[in-house]
Image 1 (cartoon, helix red, strand yellow):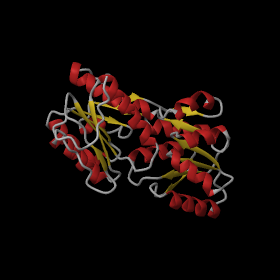
Image 2: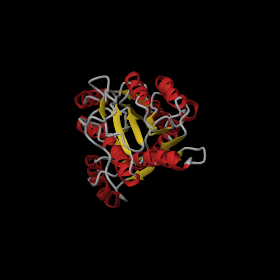
Image 3: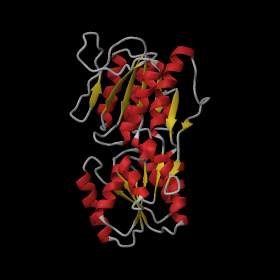
Length: 311
């Protein structure tokens, strides 16, 4: 099988270009099925490397072309989806973290006969927007699971750190934590600036010594929380190599993993199966990839996969 994730510069390329400095697009040669893979990725967030790794492996396994583009700005992400529609791709896989802002472009895709699957964010709304399938975690369930776990360890006043404004997925996680620990307080930070995250956390933790847990919603933010220095325990959503190492050495209590490699892989293969054979995975329901807890009890099993960029 040939990996069909190709660089720009070939005359037969269909171009999808990001419309801002924050966006990125990787056009590829137009042969066979072409799938646009559009996310709200913030540049530098290691989580998305894992999603992309799964999608790239799927592209190789089923011999399709995958075009990656991303922008954390909801309006510009919508433009990227519309550009995929205009380029007449055969399928679109997209995150739906800001469903209202993306609704017009997703519906334009379905109106043009282009199948759309959601992944990672938007589990509550993907059907409303016209997406056929969804692959990801139920963030409310995941957040509740975290809340129940830290409540059992005695947490009374957790700080839930939201690193992207307007993200329904992140807000659902914190709402889930709060449902299990009523004393939960949310804190908004700028996830694109690690130094700013660290300083904001330092100020908050110094101002309120009753905070006993910091729950971060992305692996890089957990590392910022460590840098902030506090006696509060740290738990996080999602994994990367550094976070896994900090679980092993006890600086992070646990991570809740939504298995992003599986999200990327299944989003691509589901579109391939739909295009080739009319398959609808999940039987009309979202396919859940999490939550899965990673802590000291299983980190040695998980760590080799983290090192391969698949967990």
